[in-house]
Length: 331
Ligand SMILES: Cc1cc2nc3c(=O)[nH]c(=O)nc-3n(C[C@H](O)[C@H](O)[C@H](O)COP(=O)(O)O)c2cc1C
Image 1 (cartoon, rainbow, N blue to C red):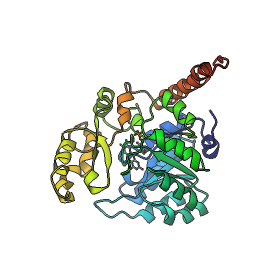
Image 2 (tube, rainbow, N blue to C red):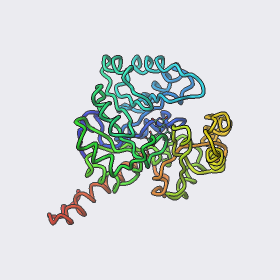
Image 3 (tube, protein in one colour):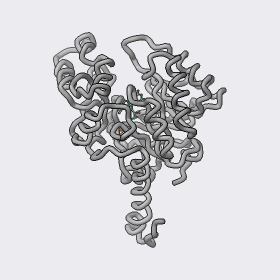
């Protein structure tokens, strides 16, 4: 498959692994890149900018294919030296950066000067257009289905993607709810140049998280996610568990939610322990509605080959047949 995205990024398959806090380590990013997609390291998973520098080197030892780094700017409990992380990204010679959370404008001049391709993740068309206007190279359009922060507009990809196709000139990725070949074929049909996946990549052999988490995802249905922090206007889609139910109960109380009332429950270190210890109710952890489509734990290569193969079959056979054209034999 060739799209504007595969050409621009120098990758084989139009599939990107989005930044994932605590999950986006070198093991996963290199596996995705080695399988022909674009793997992305998550900068803030590293405790310091120096640790990020080491992680980039570790990833380079594990793949000679292109990979990127995600630098997410969101409200955090502790202040973060974002400029230092950006400096390490640039000085390490990284050529693809995924930005998210806030307007990336202040970071663009140094990234551009270093010849970096910037993929900005947005949850609305107005932010996508702004990203194009300020000089981002690619937009990753994150629909309401997605894990992590879907924004506050609650617009699904069936509306966002055709709008993006109508209004954007730069290439864009469809993100949120993708996990199989049907999704990839649909994303391409809706005008996207590829897909970005988070949740689906957590349930792979190489994802550096406890097997119990991967198994929970295999067993989960599309009903097993919940939206927290709605009352704080910082909505996050997470896997539904005991802690999440407690947060939702606190958020449902009359009046404005006080972050202090949930701080202990949602601490990042607790979420991290879910991944490291496999204690599913220890903390809050991100997952998207696509958990309902996950029923195995393949390697990244198996997953990417399968998704692309299924999509090609759908396009060459089912869609060709529906439109009355010849049914192509697949190689
Ligand atoms: C465990 C997890 C952690 C995530 N952390 C981040 C993050 O730190 N920064 C970010 O921009 N997106 C983050 N995301 C969102 C993904 O990059 C991606 O946009 C999203 O997962 C796409 O939706 P999907 O899960 O339905 O594929 C995270 C997603 C998951 C599943």
